[in-house]
Length: 207
Image 1 (cartoon, rainbow, N blue to C red):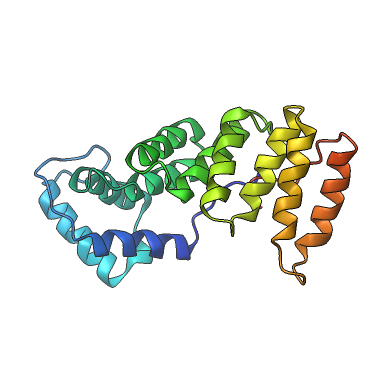
Image 2: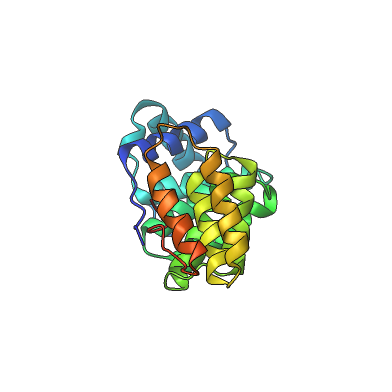
């Protein structure tokens, strides 16, 4: 299992999403940050996002995201990013709940489908159970560029003993890969393994 890590790009993406949102503010405080009205703190964070987003601390970013869940209650993105940050902190159970919150707001939000499936695999010790299989399959159905999701959905079917379904899924994905895609060779080996009744592993969900 590959651990998620927040790179500068991740911070910039989060900052951009929050800056574009144009959020309002509330007059409440939050434990763990300096004792000052939320309006003042959020205004300062907004300016920091605009001028120097990569310098945001974990607490500052979580504070802004939590405010976003209030100001945009129907948006899945703040819940998803909260999940990513919780997962980066080594809190997969809390991350799982955040991803579920994102999907309650948009059941077809592909990033949350993928991350929730990854966490379920992580919590199961590497097994691709029915719930993870369903999530991966839905993500690939919505976006066929998510080849990894299709692979893991096929592996879930194989682990459940449905070799025919797993092989069919693998062949479907394989047929849609460009001729020069280096993954084609890997897929051929996996298709052969599944055809022989083996639940070949495609690697960690993070790949």
